[in-house]
Image 1 (cartoon, rainbow, N blue to C red):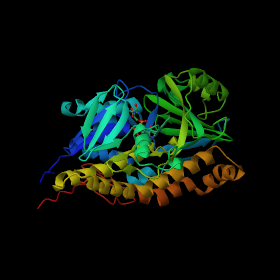
Image 2 (image 1 turned 45 degrees about the horizontal axis):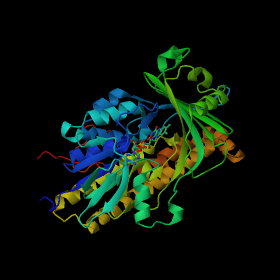
Image 3 (image 1 turned 180 degrees about the horizontal axis):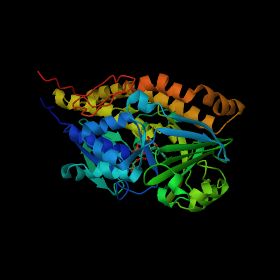
Image 4 (image 1 turned 60 degrees about the vertical axis):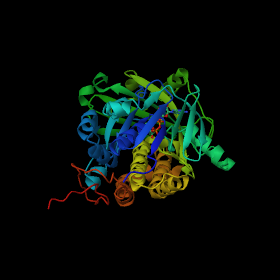
Length: 442
Ligand SMILES: Cc1cc2nc3c(=O)[nH]c(=O)nc-3n(C[C@H](O)[C@H](O)[C@H](O)COP(=O)(O)OP(=O)(O)OC[C@H]3O[C@@H](n4cnc5c(N)ncnc54)[C@H](O)[C@@H]3O)c2cc1C
């Protein structure tokens, strides 16, 4: 049975999460449109993204698995070093053993290009670039969105996938008279210099094997260098020079050069210093690394997903992966609503969004907590963190223990799309709670 008023979802932002949601809504046969501020949904930003087992399960369901495997490199190995290159901890991540698949790294541009190019033409035409959200009006039957160029669009609900500085969030909070304390939900304590290099341009490249995450941990500074088949991606973390802030910081090319100069002698692998890597850089960026989560992810017909509601430092490689879980849960709920025959009233949408918030609460909070703990440990903020990272962790293998005993069971409870099969599900030692559509031959 079809709902009396079919759903029309307005997605603000065509970044990785907006495009993942577009894939899900296309599969669910739910009408949508994306309004993206930039002139393209496939910009080159220089960054890489680690994809975890839960996102691969979604790609499998959507038929994107072969492409995603082709453009990514599994990274099962991790090595931790001192700034002089001496390795003091090496191990295999817990993911492959626990969940059947290692984390894999890919270029962000390749991710968004794949998510966009595999949409059918009928969905591509629903993506409008050069459209910056200006205002939202709630009407008795839906929503009207106005863009800064004066154009406006009607729908039944809005999903804000417009990133850390989300305008959707700000409008939602103004409309709901959210307390002042909620209006700047994220605090920045660290900044990150990120970029990528062609692997084969690195000095001694024949020794730089793909599949490894090299991390340098030291007082006030840490790095991650992920080596893929074609590229290596780096992030260097350090505390904000001026102390923590809730304000937005925009960096210049000069800031990037200065940061790179400041850290050039630090080793990012046992053999390479950051200076040697940076000489081969394709593209680099500098960003503040906000942390935190909004208290309310939704209000009436408006909901937030991805970085717009939950900002996680990249250390644990879960920002995008956590946002993917947001849109899977919403996809399941919206498909059920769309097919229920129920009128899409404000109450019905609010109920769906409340269920979404409740479902996502536990895992998101755990991920936030883990990421906060990790960045403070690897930058040795205090002697206890130093002892933990330098001596206790390598001896007792706490990273793997936390991954397999705390995060692993929680990860295994995360949803998949309930209307699609998982043709290539891999099981590890921890059983997945959801298994997608299970077809039994009788
Ligand atoms: C250096 C770095 C490395 C990272 N590594 C990882 C990793 O390894 N694994 C991982 O899971 N995550 C990682 N992350 C986090 C990950 O990149 C983010 O969580 C993810 O990009 C969030 O996607 P999003 O679509 O929610 O937001 P965004 O990527 O910010 O996209 C938001 C989109 O909304 C658009 N927009 C903004 N305002 C408006 C408006 N007013 N109107 C219309 N459109 C608008 C923007 O132009 C943009 O296209 C990393 C982040 C950084 C900075």
